[in-house]
Length: 220
Image 1 (cartoon, rainbow, N blue to C red):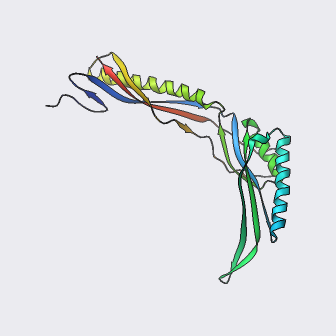
Image 2: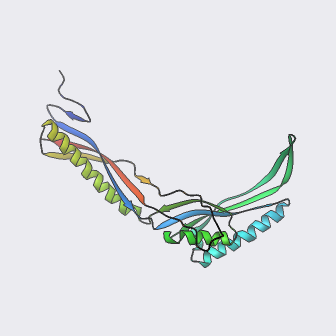
Image 3: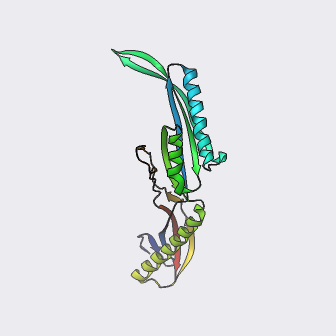
């Protein structure tokens, strides 16, 4: 004999459980950014390629420090030396070396992202990528989203209970937080037009911070 039904909830003679998921989300304006900036140089002579790269990279970093970027917010992301080859009539021809030095830059004021990128490019950067935005205190927003997720699960359980006529009184038995999910802001590769006097427009948009719970309620 079947003692109950199961459509995301369970009803039995000894207990009445309703199992639901709840979701909550909060939008926030980003207040910080990260970007990968770097220098790529090429030469037939490896020492020349390395020396030129180091000189330009040091100048670029000095310019960023000069506009307020802290040394602690500058980290090497990648440094590599690659041989350059071309192919003619099926033959591999050595052309020289390419040296690439990339840095991860943390920008603690998202509104200054465009100015930071312009400064870097004006001082030798020719690699700009991976511009992303975030909030400095994500846990504050996540906690708000989590609260909304719990409320959402309770309302769903109430709706189910009323719809099938079990009861209008429900009590939480367990609430399980699922993996935190944050939807990142725009992921950009910037391009530049130096012909104009205005700076590079970088728009951070909005971030969406989500939370999900799985909750079990008792109905009596």
